[in-house]
Image 1 (cartoon, rainbow, N blue to C red):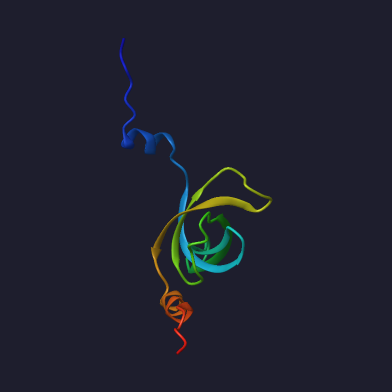
Image 2: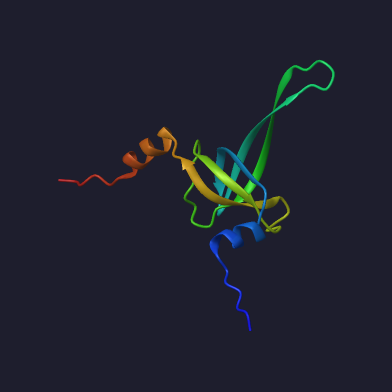
Length: 110
């Protein structure tokens, strides 16, 4: 009998899902972030490059993303009426998020 071995490369090809990279614009909901993706597309007739912004609701289990972070989101099963994406990774932290972390540290009272 031949055994099948699941390698990481084989698993990624089997679960190939759409991924997008964008900026977090809102974290006001619990376990949900709003990611804005900027898309550029040439006009069919005039060939001028146009920018389109689209917002996606993504699931963030640990509430780790902050406003301004650049994140990668991956397509997932429907989790709610609007939420069809899941946070894959935080590509780059926002400088504003780092300043907020420093200000949240408790100061010892004397």
